[in-house]
Amino acid sequence: MTGGTTAAQLRADGPLRIADRDFTSRLIVGTGKYRDNDIMVRAIRASGAEMVTVAVRRVELDRSQDTSILHHLSPDEFFILPNTAGCYTAADAVRYARLGRAAGLNDWVKLEVIGDEKTLLPDVHATLDAARTLAEEGFRVLAYTNDDLITALRLEDAGCVAVMPLASPIGSGLGLINPYYIREIKARLRVTVIVDAGVGTASDACATMEQGVDGVLMNTAIAAADDPVAMARAMRLGIEAGRLAYLAGRMPKREVAVPSSPTRGMLD
Image: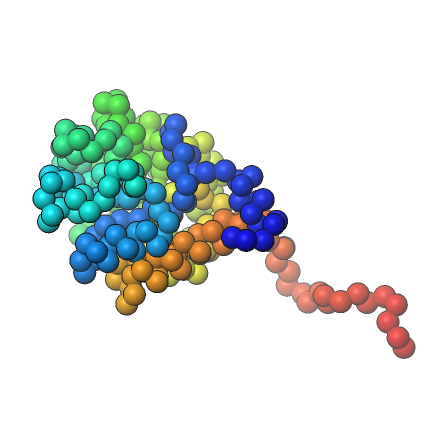
């Protein structure tokens, strides 16, 4: 961002705040599905993301091993957000969150409890149960859920520091299906709202941020691109453009044409 007005608006906007911590980027990225760890690190750097999420179930937690993803992600450069991807019960999600903390990651967790193998949609009841347990144990819980306002409100009441409604199913790349529901969730919740899952390309990221949400989390859209590093940069720009468009305020939609040039003082 180089324009004077643009830079000033972004500065006035401030950082992404979750709980008591500020982040420089509103884009959060995952670490799965990359061809190799070198491309993963280069893509994450190109995305500008400060927070990176790793699946406790799937990652080798010993940083000293070159085969571990964590070996390639310096804690001085990235904030690591453990997640419970692949869990289908509240008990499993709680267990893996505790395992991540015991392994020295941190007490933040992206809570994910899947309810259906085909759609990968969340089990909202199990998610609520796990969120209450983890919040009571002092975890900073960021809960993945569907785009249902009532569930989002319940997760906030359960003590989550962020609620993460989906744009569309995990890995689908379908983009934002229900912008109205996402806007309602953002308007009603006091905690941070981050859209998680479904973004397929930079225009999806931009359209999602235009709803006024605080951030977007994505993985497959970058990792599965033909050029993950280029797509990561595109996503970074899409996030920034969408946020700026939201702050700027769009023109109202009309069902009639309105001339853009003055109609008075024209020559006969």
